[in-house]
Amino acid sequence: MRGALIAIEGLDRTGKTTQTERLLVKLKELNIKHKLVKFPKRDTQIGNLINTYLTEKSFQLSDQAAHLLFSANRWEIIDEIKKELQGGTVVILDRYVYSGVAYSAAKGLDFQWCLNPDVGLPKPDLTVFLQFKQSENASRTGFGDERYEVAEFQEKVKLLFENFSTNSEWSPLYVDGLTIDQVHEEIWSLFKQYLEGLDEDLQVF
Ligand code: NYM
Ligand code: MG
Image (cartoon, rainbow, N blue to C red; front, side, top):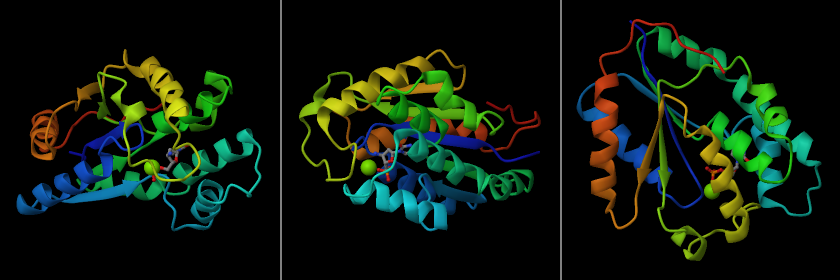
């Protein structure tokens, strides 16, 4: 049995990080082996560059080069993730390939071109996509000042994410009007069937 690979996806400010933290607490309580990986993973050399790109508007990089850095940031840690899965650990991803494609394609890059560098990465067994039914997101306060944290751009990203909604592992979760606890309960109800681990091999993008 291998561990499940679970991704939490969504636009900025939809509560991904809060929810992944809640999941970790629960998994700890239940004594289930788990590992969280947050992408971009900013504490590697590639991740450092990405962090500079996101936080310093003066750091100039072509959209293509930035895109490839985000993908490289996944590839540089994927063997470690696979090893954890083989050892029976549940791996939770806070953003993954879907963010990679949606944010770059929203800038006008070709969708398939955006997916290509990630082809071969393992597909999650479950992807929970946090979203707002209303485009309430656009008017939400609390955007930081990183690159991309602009309402109009987020609307474009949202449309691009919709391309994945036909994937079999894709589970949209509307968070409008729900409390943090309620969202957690919803995620948990999707999540719990994967806790025992899986026999089938990982699929790949
Ligand atoms: N982002 C994230 C991308 O543009 N491509 C990617 O492959 C990934 C993983 O990074 N606005 C963007 C989306 C976010 C930004 O992520 C930082 P976070 O989760 O806010 O730290
Ligand atoms: Mg963010």
